Every structure is written in structure tokens, then in C-alpha cells.
Length: 279
Image (cartoon, rainbow, N blue to C red; front, side, top):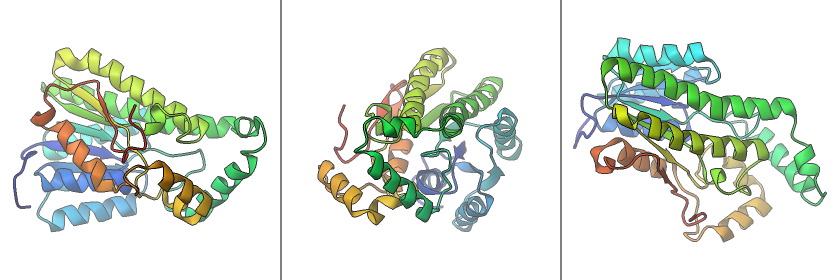
């Protein structure tokens, strides 16, 4: 790794680190000198990220994570300490858009989005289409999973006396109900409130907690947009900068939030969204 290393000697954990925003952030943290734990339910792409970091001269470890499990999250945080000697940064990028989401399954995403377009003209049907099982899994992964990852990290930070930094991934959907399915928007609003509440509770321990609320970023989760002309045209018209963002756009925001450049910030949210959302 070459260049200025703003995270030299630090240890970072990135949940959902195998793909998209998580992958870009794991690579960014590593390029800045951090040892990185890449935690994900998909181990093959997680190992690929680790291989890329190591090939560039960095240190990294892949850990299998079930975001919904307290035990799995605790083991993830413990692995960071046992392998690299600490835990300074936690980034919670693990998330799903709906209960049946599987990263990379574009065909299934297109079918689901097409169904949403079909019921849009049927009053109330979109709300009735939300199945309890679907709702529960989204809440479990996106909201409870974020809480469990944060709690596991804080436990280690307090034991080590670390003035840690936590970055949660919310969404513009945390504030804009039209930016995603029902369960997703509710889960992300919960992540934003969790960020604010935990920031106030952890400030006295020297632990800062901030959120990023991305707009539409080019990831597996949003790949379906380009497959459906109606969605794509509507979205491009709504983004003042005229294009979707890239995972690196979020990684750069995350770097700001975990360095001293944002040292007086806690309980805040950044919206890299191309102007789509400015509230």
C-alpha cells in the first residue's frame, strides 16, 4: 500500500464487505493503512476482496457473518481483536432491499420490480403485498443486524479503551418514503434513529457514530434499474447531477467520517445522492 495512510495501525470491520458499497469501503480503508475484516454471508466474494487487499500489500481477513445473529456478530468483532489486536472502526454495510433479496440475482429483482409497477395503479395493493415474513427478514437484517454489529463492536471498544468510530449505512429512504419498498424504508429510518440515539449514548466513551444515507448507487441492489426503461428514465430525471453514484462515492464519505477530519461530528448523516435528496 502506498500514499498517505490516514488509518495506519488501525483495525476496521466492514459488514456486507463482499460487494458494492461494503467492498469499495473495505478496499478504501485498506488503502489507507487499516487492517480490514471483511464480513459477509457470501464467503467467496469476501475472500476475493481479502485477496485483493493482500495482493496490494495490506492485511485483511474474511469472516462469515449472519447479520441477524448476536453470536455471529460477536464472533466477528472478536476475530478482529484476536487477529489484528484491536477494533477501531465499524462500518455496517450489510443490508437487503426485500426479504427474498440475494446479491447478484438480477432476474429475480427485475421480476419483483415489474410486479411493483403493475400494482402501482391499484389503490392500497402495494401495501397489502407486503408479507410478514418479508417484512421481518428486512427488519432483522437491516435494523437488528446493524444494532448487533454496533453492539459487538462497542463491547470490544469499551474493553480496549478505544475511541472508536462507527459508520452506519442508512439510505435516502430513511427520510424519503418513496425511495424504496415499505419494509426497506422503515428499516433504514430505524437505522438513522439508532445512529442518533447511540451517538448520544456513546459520546461520553469517546465513540463517534455517524450515518451515510446513499442515493442511487451502482451496485447489485440497484442493477435492475437499468433493466427497466420506465424506472431508469424516471430516476435519471429526478437526479440533478444526471447519473447514479458509484460505490467509491460512499467509500470516500465513509473515510471522512472515520478520520479526525470529522472529529467534531457525531449523530449526523451524509447524503451522497447527486442532489436526488437534499433534506
